[in-house]
Amino acid sequence: MRRIAILAEGAFEWHYGKTATGIIRYSKDTVVAVIDSTKAGMDVAQALGAEFGKGISVVRDIYEALMYQPDMLLIGIAPIGGGLPEAWRGQLLTAINAGLDIVSGLHVFLADDAELRAAAKRRGVTIWDVRRPPEKNRVAQFIPHRLGSHTVLMVGSDCATGKMSTALELNQEACNRGLHSAFVATGQTGIMISGSGLPVDRIISDFVAGMVEEMVLEFTDKYDWVFVEGQGALNHPGYAAVTLGLIHGCMPDAMIFCHKAGATTIEGYEHCPLPSLNRLIEMNEEAIHWLCSDLGSKVVGLSLVTLGLSEQEARSAIKHAEDETGLPATDVWRFGTATLMDALNTTFQTI
Image 1 (spheres, rainbow, N blue to C red):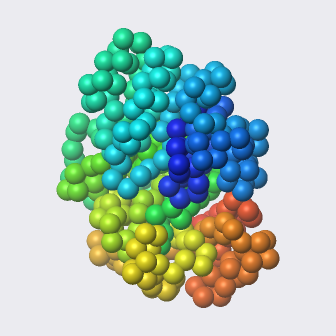
Image 2 (tube, rainbow, N blue to C red; image 1 turned 135 degrees about the vertical axis):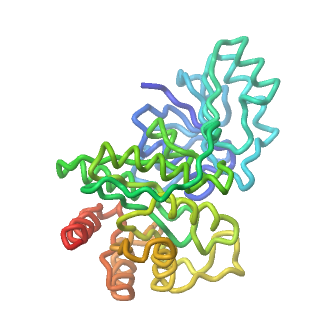
């Protein structure tokens, strides 16, 4: 068990701070403090308006965080472009000199930074760049999964629509039901939580499907239920390519569609309206059928993010999505994943 301080300066919130919130909610390690000077003095629950994170202090800087005796500093935001804000360099060096290991999901690799690398070597600490891809490359070979295994991929209408959380919650629900299941991480936060996975957004595009295929096959050989974290969205102007590579590499037996209730445009692209839920679902199903029309993979349920809505409003949004699509829906954080797991069971019993 590690004691983690999370650096999320100026961005400790649900969207750009999703790495921080994911680690706090799902990591088996202990988060002892979050660094964000704009919310210093609060605890995590107050800063996020959440029901989790009570008692975890939000502090001004690394010096205050060291008072909570962390042994690791984790960068908890995912800025567009993935660069290192220069203002953070001093905080990182202070953490390294205090003996803290560094975990980063940025696109820029901290271990390649001469100053940080030298400081880490002097202090005998490690820098883990989670997004560093494997050295090998592999083109997809279109290999079938083991008979009897069930691969479920989370897809969605945008980034930050709960794809990782839904996969983690479904895996937990499957385990609670006595099923032999696993969570497959494909992004930096999921890898930090599970300790393994594939940073698909750092792999050369020609090899995304092949590397995903290899990883998923390893899991389907070992587990009967495999829940794969999704990335981006097919309709996203910036990240559609990684989504398509993941879909074709995963070749799921079923999908869960993730969506933020009430969203009408892509986050950060206000001129990019979202198609209807039915059209979005159809797009993802079509992408699989381009390769294998006989696979029969369908979206079998919806996972909605209803953050900011009252319980009544959330239930109304879920009912509206169900009426619109004819599929079961839930908010996995508020109401659990039982309805989605039931839908998956029903689907695989009829295949």
